[in-house]
Length: 536
Image (cartoon, rainbow, N blue to C red; front, side):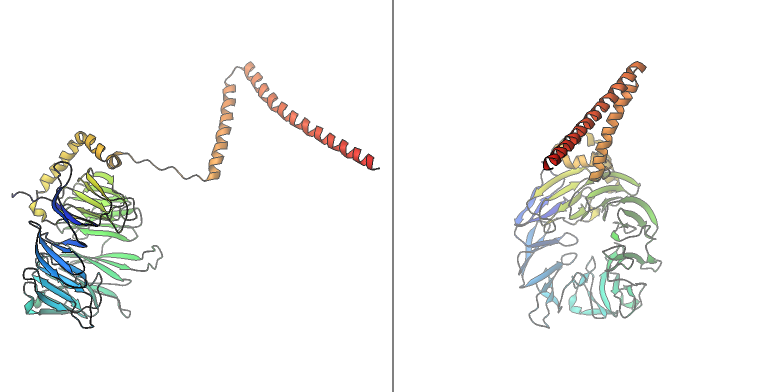
């Protein structure tokens, strides 16, 4: 097997971005592969071959990631958004329109620097950008417009539209990853008709009937998730209002469709509540779901929609499959405290627990050996930083920043790295060497390592103030009871004298108090009598 490529990380701060090399880090600190470059945004292509850098509102640079050298610079005024194709062959830009019919969406060839396609678009949203979608190998490209999907030859846009799919009311679409073999189209609810998701073949001779279809009511938006082999589609249907009044955030349902038509229905979730996250494994043969009211449940399903692994319940809303398969991370980020659980789901074994509070982004490294979490602005303005964890949850490295905007791995094909057996061996090595490295790690990051090792204690029950005072009174009563019990252990003679002394002491106090009260009453009557005699 060829030597595995080095891992690289893009880190963007207010002054610009830089490229780190590693992990592993040679001297305990990351090596800088590319010195800081001023920019407002940066994004890798899906295969990691090229990097798009937006330097200001009119200049976009394209870098070759093999040496991180600039290979093309575009000067495009009034840029509002930009996107690279999966292999970096095309740059797509959206400009602020200056005229109603201006063609403000332009597709540029990175190699030649010239435009290859134009169209006009009034507004941009998450469902409509990027306007032109590519298959992973860029052989197929498509876009949707009013009531239809237009298909292009991804290698030659001069051919124009080579195919059309008639889909009345289309509101969103997603092209499958493998060679663009299928297209999923979402049609929103309209005039009492239910919303639907349909799967079409992108091949011209297999149109226009959908190969799979699923309809549902109470749906405002959808998320479409293809597996990597383009055989299964997960549809997360969400509505803004929950008619059962169980959730303020609306309701969600997870549907599963296959391109061969063998399954069209709901995923059998075993707990009521929202679907927090869903992700396919790197093989495309399993998917995992985090769902239900807190504490949420997590389950791994096979491609026939049968549950195969239950990962338990907890404060979780995020799941990440390791790109090398077998391992996954279950976490609770956002408004949750940051608990993370690392699983070997093939062995149904929990490898370790830890915490990464206030994390905004999280992802496995391409080689599957490290899990990176980042706390970034503008979501959080304080405690910005990066942490790297091993496959068993042990903290490997961490670094804080005054302000951090972005941290992401450079994409690499998982096949370029060592296989599953080597990765499993590395996990066992980590466990064996854990005692040797514990001292060094605890010096660098004591809080994180202790978080993973400390046992969890059950929190004390809440006591209101009146209950606390009652507890104090009860403690005094118990103290008096202990005194009496100690006297009860004495001999009869001593016990009698002790009880008499206690009784006499209590009696003498009461007698003195009553005597003083009677004397005051006598003095008061005498004063009243003297005053009345004087008056007469």
